[in-house]
Image (cartoon, rainbow, N blue to C red; front, side):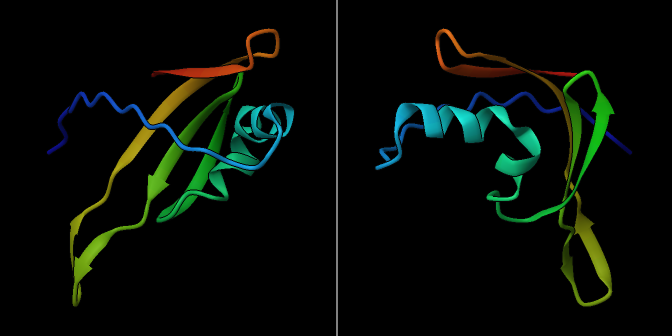
Length: 87
């Protein structure tokens, strides 16, 4: 059985990278995703949309949970912002 969960996430962090370098990484979803923990697979869906398949949480031979979601991404170099909407 599948179900939908809505979660608002807001994170802030500091980095020594320049704003341009940080934006360049975050705007490149596949490259950015390579830094996320527990990602099993990132599937491109076209139009800068991606399906994230996270590693299964399991005990022994029993899979308890696997999170799969998809988002469309939009980046704006003028404001150096990246946002996404679920699809």
